[in-house]
Amino acid sequence: MRIEVRHLRVCYGSFAALDDVSFEVENGAVFALIGRNGAGKSSLVRALLGQRRADGGKITIDGLDPWRQRARLMARLGAMPEAPDAPEALGAAALGELVARFYPQWDREGYRARLDRFGIPQDRAFAKLSRGQRALVQLSLALAPRPGALVLDDPTLGLDAVARRFLFDELIGELAEHGATIVLTSHDLAGVERVATHVGILREGRLAGCGPLESLREEAVLAGLAAPTLEEIFVARTGAGGGR
Image (cartoon, rainbow, N blue to C red):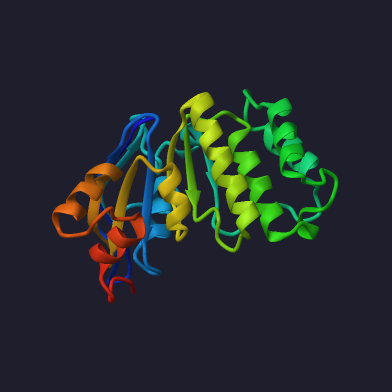
């Protein structure tokens, strides 16, 4: 699924959380949106998911407007919120059966196989799972419909190293098998560097850099950084005062 964002503006009163943001994500690409706290990442995610109407500009996902055609779009799109959110009394198996009702192509076998691979007790109430286990359940729910695109809002936030490794390895495997388009926000720059093909760097609601990761590396080398990591590119682009 191809994603286009054109001159996007999102405001809260007189405050512009996003201002004139434009980028494209080609089918099968992994676009990582990074920025300091308050840079506008979550506002962009909400706009992509049709949870927030744009105050200016336009978003299309496979030609569909997420605000006007949200129900049609969400049938083809997987999402993982920043904070784990599910009926707390239900176990992972019951959650899968609940969510499966909304997706005609739900992969029950694949969903349960992921839970087993992650070591998730399938009948334990969601509220009694660890933070990492809840995140991995939500990733499994997002992947089970075999969506054409995934939107993941800081999926590794608060996870330990083992859970982060599980999550990024699963994304790599999913890409190899199904080629889903992925947009993710994250503070885990080392993890992002393993999976991202393209990166957008937000600073105070505007893009401070955007393009293929390799192109951003080449630009950083020309600017004087030797073998730059994504973290070094990020710091150079945002500076000490890059967040809000």
